[in-house]
Image 1 (cartoon, rainbow, N blue to C red):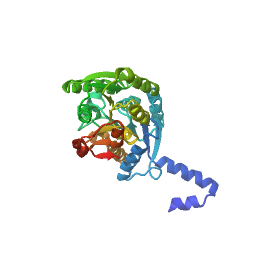
Image 2: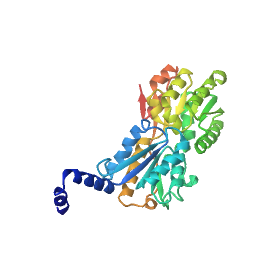
Image 3: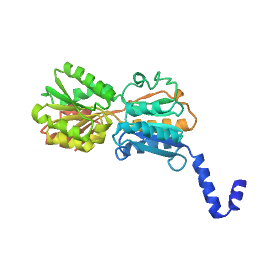
Image 4: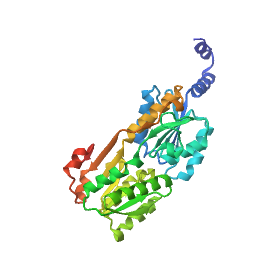
Length: 327
């Protein structure tokens, strides 16, 4: 009451800036570092904000979020991370896999970090153990890199005659590219399939990779789990259809815009969980006391319309196993 009485006694032109400054300084700030563009993250950000809300934090009401977007240019990430550190945010949340998480880790030794990665975070050096991370990092392991064999098996079930498989990876994201190539090669040998690796780090290179299909003619395409490919989802879906090559993807967003099939983590759930962790840290929890969450929700999504355009008959077993069939 005393504060209200004091402010009320001031003139309007003096009181308002003081109140605004007081509110801004009292409101915690989360830094969100993303590898792609904001439109690509739209649904995932809604899930992240829901996780924050579940812990009592609502953007622009009692928490602010500073966003930094690399727009697919990973070389910009260190500068963007440094900006968030200078901003002295209370916690940094990362989106875009291990590359973004590792950049954030190198940028600070004091600000808590909540990551979303596809690979084992212990092997990446982000945490020492999953149950007791120790240090300033914790987050979610999406397992997308570990789902390679399962995803290739589902593609083979949809295209049983496939013998030659093309694998599209982004060499600029070396950790994911190497893991994907190794896992696909191992799974393909077990299925009696031959593998051809195609590299693409830009939109132009994606188009060039598909142009090789004219000469090579693979029976199917396995697109690696990379943020670049997720952000170029429309391009990938259209090129796969144009070249009439059955393709499998790691994220359902590509199937939503015309891709044939995806199997992988439910990223909306993992980003909601990241929001919960960010909220808990704002409330006083230490990252070291928050075990790394291992995703347990995986989804198989099939675009039946695309299958028909490619002349494929989706087996009843796949239709029954699918979490969603897009007609």
